[in-house]
Image (tube, rainbow, N blue to C red):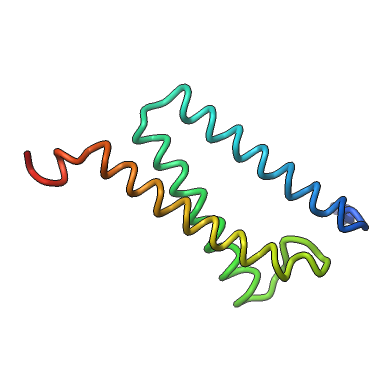
Length: 107
C-alpha cells in the first residue's frame, strides 16, 4: 500500500509546486520545438492547453475530485489555468494554420 504524501503546508510552497510544474511544461515545449517538426510542436502545445483547461473544469470543478492547490490561491489560480490552456489551444491552432496556409486554401 502506498503512503499518502502531503504537499507543502504554506501558500508559497504550493505555488512553488505549481511553478515547478510550469517549468517542466516549458522544458517539454522546448524539447518539442528543438527536436521535432513545427507541426509536432504545435500539437504538443495544443494538447497541453486542452489538458490544462479540461482537467481544471472537469476534474476540479464538475467532479470536485481535487484542486490545483489546497489553499485559497486555487480560487484565482484555477481560472487562470483554464484561460491559459484555452489560449495555448487557440495560439497553437492559429500558428499551425499559418504554417500550412497553402493546404487550408487548396493552393
